[in-house]
Image (cartoon, rainbow, N blue to C red; front, side, top):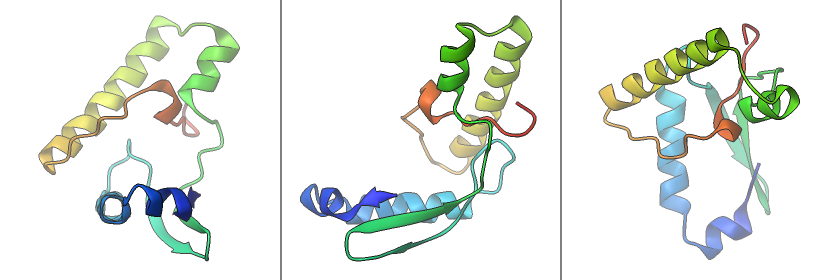
Amino acid sequence: MKVKEHIEKYEMHHQLRREMEIQTSFRHSDILRLYGWFHDDKRIFLILKYDHRGELYGLLRKNNHLSEKQAATYIVSLTNALVYCHEKDVIYKYIKPENVLLDHEG
């Protein structure tokens, strides 16, 4: 959910619409799927694929570290996703544990 007041205040309409169009068009197993969006007077709602395991950040806070195998798995997935983005001429600049969602496979 995005707050429309914030979007309007910082004139982010074009940027948000472009990001949603890009995300909706992406078809990659390591990139969260955006199915669509809708809005009311105050909020914008994004319809995303549900990933029940949460964020990498939560896993790191819970376990304090990753095994070498886990870290390698996440690095490979993230690299594959970034390669896909770059092939589509998109640069993703918000890489951080809070933005890495874990799927049913971990």
